[in-house]
Image 1 (cartoon, one colour):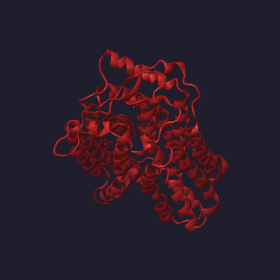
Image 2: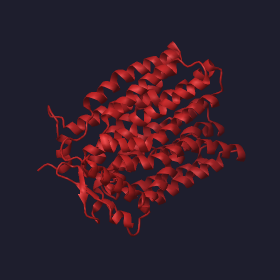
Image 3: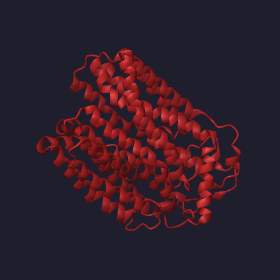
Image 4: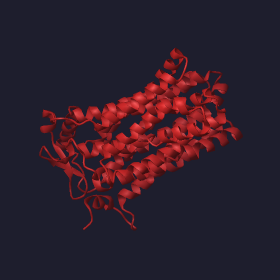
Length: 448
């Protein structure tokens, strides 16, 4: 007998490829291209844009901050839309908007125009990138295969920077930043738009009801989640971890250069973070087959804390810097895999988009604000040591938040409609006390 999640993944499949896995493959492709064109291109084009627009790099960087803040503001409405309508229209619209805004970006001639374009890009990224894609994947799979499906998508998308940053740099060197953006717009629009509109859809059998009763159930599940102390423990954990990761991503090159390493070596060592994020995700999946997911995640966060704190001692040597950055990088992409598994296992998938969107808002804000706070701390202290101490402390806070257990479920949870798997791997209402609200999530959600 096939597992329930396998039945769900096969619904509507043809030619031997289950429908759910076709969607995973498509989203792996569109996320790789989307992140490469909409997100990573900015870092490569920053200085050419600053020169072309006669503005400082700091002023240009402010546009990207606007995009991230807009992304955070859109997280909750995007999540609610995904719960009600699925991802096809939303992600198709996001990829269309992203394509148009890449073209508009190539035509800006003033800083205010750049900021306006990036205001729109923030909304487009919220609609078309990781948060929306994960919600679509989660809706197609039960606990046995959910983590494997999410892992497949994000491991492939983890190579976005490896592919597109060199490509963007080569295009800019040959043709300038404006033509480069037009080429990226052509690539993104030609691939993402048709794939999203032709392949994405909701599970056709056993999915949650979209009637008034279904909408009320989703609202009740969301209220139950935000009234659950475990949810806020996870929120603290992922916000702290996001702040640490974004701080290190922005300031690591400068720190290594301050320790006497050549700029090329500092950039190369810092570049390990992207590749190691894939390694860390694979390591988490393998480890979580044997131990509880929360234990594995907390252990990785603790290793990151030790690595950040040890940088102050060992980063003066090439070998020491590489070893410390390697240990830190293993946890760089762990939250993107652990978060969906923990949320979907505890709260089910009927209101996953709304619940995940509620969590994504402060996490995205932390990513935007933390590097600025770290820069201010560096300026005030005259060195990077306090920054490293804060990064290490944030990783320890994240580990503690992951391990924290909610005590007695709140009245809101006890009275909420409970999600559990149907015969198709979807979720349906169940009495209070079933697996999704246990304080100790079982290993199966991470071991798939």
